[in-house]
Amino acid sequence: MKGHLFLFLSHPSSVAKEACIDHVLTSPPPLLLSPHLSFHATSRRRPITAVASSSHLCNPTKLDRSALKLAEAVSEDELWAAARLRIRTFNDFNPSVVGVEDYKKCLAEREFEALKERIAGKRTGFGRVTCINASLPLSHVLSISDDLCTTCTFSENGEDRVLVGTLDLNQCIHLPDEITGMKPQGIGGDFARAYLSNVCVAKELHRNGLGYMLIAKSKLVAEDWGISDLYAHVAVDNESAKNLYMKSGFVYESDEPAWKARFLDRPRRMLLWIAIPNNLDL
Image (tube, rainbow, N blue to C red; front, side, top):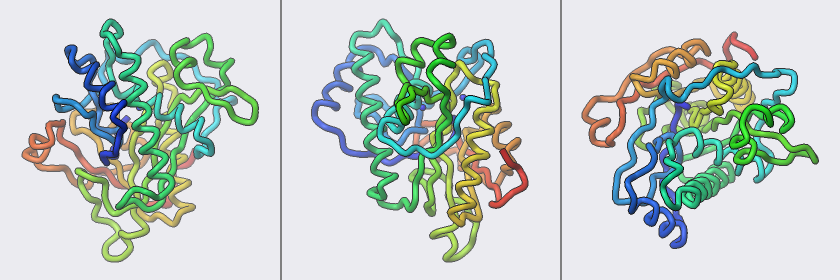
């Protein structure tokens, strides 16, 4: 598919982080930076969208669902793992480029800080925000990917777990630079409208239904919040993402004009909607 929905707030970074990013970008850009994340890289080049393709898919690994946990993040350790998974998923890094590991760390730190700020209610325009994750015990992932284990492991109640999927649920009127949902009308839009963003699954575990399960969990949380209308943005040419949302019960509401996509230097988006509650369960 650190997926298919979007947060776009820029946020402050330290001089050290900016220097790190600028250093790496003096070489040919090694990655495609996805706009799904909540920042824009501080660089002289505009980031372009990373679109999932068949080259990113591997032979599917069978998931042990009995060991899977779907829950809202409760620790900074888990939020850090979510930030690392997003950077890992939404970018194509060239490992031969000098400084690429420092660059990954810079990007992950920026997403981590922005995610904490959104959840803490420190970002203007956002109401309630939560990070919903899918995780497996480390022992279940060791044979699948050393890199995934190294990058996305966190500790929970004394157990090492690996974060394998993540998304954000955002209660707000609209997401920056994105199409605004039309439902509900009037004052209800202030508290009863929400958007998904940063939806992603570790590429090693694609085709196991993790994206569907994460979205289903987000709908339950949205219902508990009193949300009546849930939205998702997706690139018009991202067929796998559109199929995922349609399977989850979303329907088309609108799309953005071509001129806006050109102005923002990214693929054109469409806006999908679902009423909450709905009849699709975990």
